[in-house]
Length: 116
Image (cartoon, rainbow, N blue to C red; front, side, top):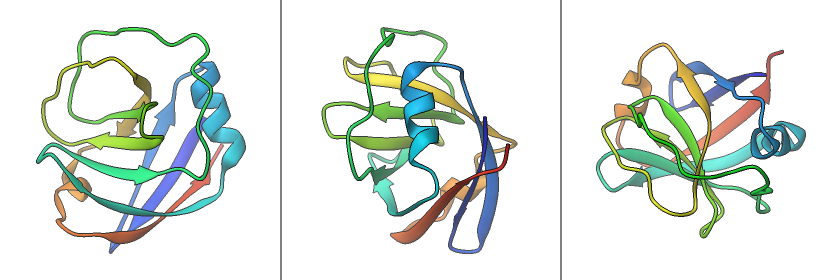
């Protein structure tokens, strides 16, 4: 499941893993959201509804480029710098290519749509 993500002047892709929460996000596409900075290591965007948490659990090997869902707040988290797993964080997939688009500071309209 590959998604096209666009905000500001940036267009990039991400690949979702085959998991219940990722498939739930896929079922919601296309989405028009707002993306903003958070915690100096991620950009976040709030979804219109919560995703299923079925099959989620702790994970390791956290890395920049991870696309996650933070269940307590109901937001996507696009990590562009190091981070650590915390309870409620569900990894949905990975950005394809580098994290450079996420380094653009500010709040922007965000569009996420299906590619394949």
